[in-house]
Length: 408
Ligand code: HEM
Image 1 (spheres, rainbow, N blue to C red):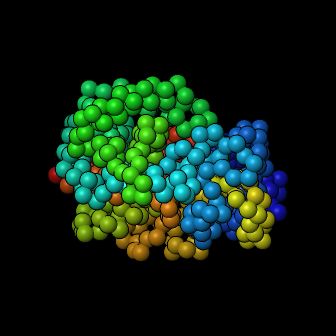
Image 2: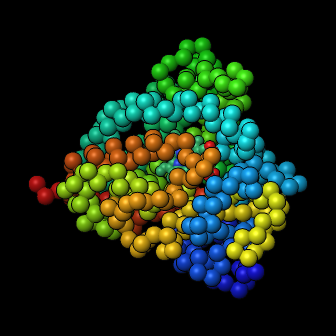
Image 3: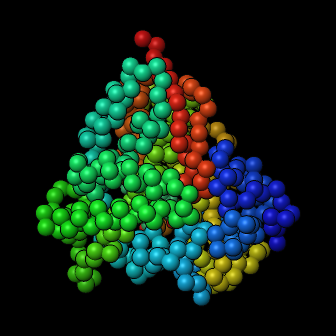
């Protein structure tokens, strides 16, 4: 068994290892030398316990599609579980941290809100919002793209999905931002989580009494076909608070990473401007390239032999979508950003029963932003160095000052 002591792999449980972006060198080594790797606990590893690191595309996608042997909830004699390295006691409640049959019930109810029609109806508002955001920076020599655009688009979109009243948005978004930015070992810091949940309670109660046209109203009313049950308050609250980290942080990283990719590969922006019919493949390549959800964790529900290693019942198993998306065994020239890449079966949105609920919304947000960018600009350049959020879960650019380029 290859472990930390005989490899050059950085401490993957330490956020500091991600301060300069994703540690590709470690994962290039892992894919070649130890595709199923035992990560020993370090002084900062949550729960003081080691975990498996799966890095090749074939193994990552096999685990994504095997919820029976790889649980998103708890397994063995654990009292916690979930999809992060740290054991969450709340595993078994939120959609992304449940297994069947509960997952099937929750997912079928929230699916009723996220219909293609409901998502498509958000497009006009999104295009207007992105246009206004870009207009607001038009006369500035340089601006922080992450703060002014990449942060706002997904946060406002989630607020639209959840039907958050306009006068409550700024406060709620500030709590979400502060909760995510804190150094707490949970995704959303407890102090802000309480504030967000209190606000969510009021909004959900209002949707029950006065259903509106938003997706949350549909979900509040939705009935499970098999027994006519609806989501209870606790389930709705979990869903409400899940959507911000699941949908806002990821899309923020994708949008910030888009501009960085176009700065590093300027000919790809020109290609899209010259031929907007490449939009569909461009969006998939952006998700592969940026892979905003860089890893997920499962818990083994039985002893499993993988690539000659024995994973024991109850072991924590992490799989790294970012590494899968750079696997040369599956992708041709994976370290090249190529918007014509097709087919592009990346692992960036998950697979199987937990496949991203907001996939079509994420794709819409990215394509609507690209549409507005190619209409207005000829390219971008960096002003100073971009800053990464040092986090192994929500890796993405936190600040990126840019100047837009136009020939006219
Ligand atoms: C580029 C943006 C996005 C990326 C890269 C992304 C990535 C992912 C991935 C990899 C998963 C699978 C999790 C797992 O296997 O445990 C997932 C699940 C999920 N995503 Fe996304 N996501 C994005 C945007 C969104 C948006 C916009 C929303 C909501 C509006 C959303 C809501 C969810 C939810 C609720 C789940 C859990 C689904 C389940 O467990 O059944 N995501 N996402």
